[in-house]
Length: 222
Ligand SMILES: [Zn+2]
Image (cartoon, rainbow, N blue to C red):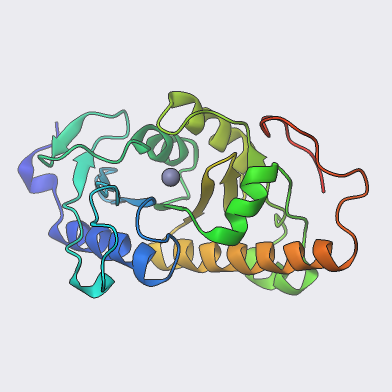
């Protein structure tokens, strides 16, 4: 049974820092995005309340007070936090349950990866990044489900596999890692990858068969 003694103040602070960094590192224009961290000592999950309550527009992100994190068990029982967690809580928990090696799930609305989330295309392997990403490098777009739906997590887990990132159809991106620093590094690599590939497609005439209409609920290789 989890008790108040199981809660770790360090993870409250980390989660608040991570929420602020989503803004500070430009992974969202002002709203949208959230982060979760798993304490390996207890398996408890610290989840940001999301950025939906951030004033828009705001003149300085440094003046924004990060929402208080909430704490959950892996199966979704809330232990702490008087605010509702992000609506993407089921997706965070689904990924953490499926990936014991992952201790941080970072969801962003970063612009370049969202481009590929909108068109439902895969980002292929890029040889220059293999050292950082390892052999599993290409990044897929998960099947479409409305934000907050349970299916977002199911589709994200399926498309993520054992890789470091995935795009959420018509929505944004998710980067994961064994630590918060690794998850942010993976999110930055994903953005660089998406920007490079977008320009490569623009400068070389785009996709041979054009883009298909309709929601990108099916994986299409680039
Ligand atoms: Zn989102």
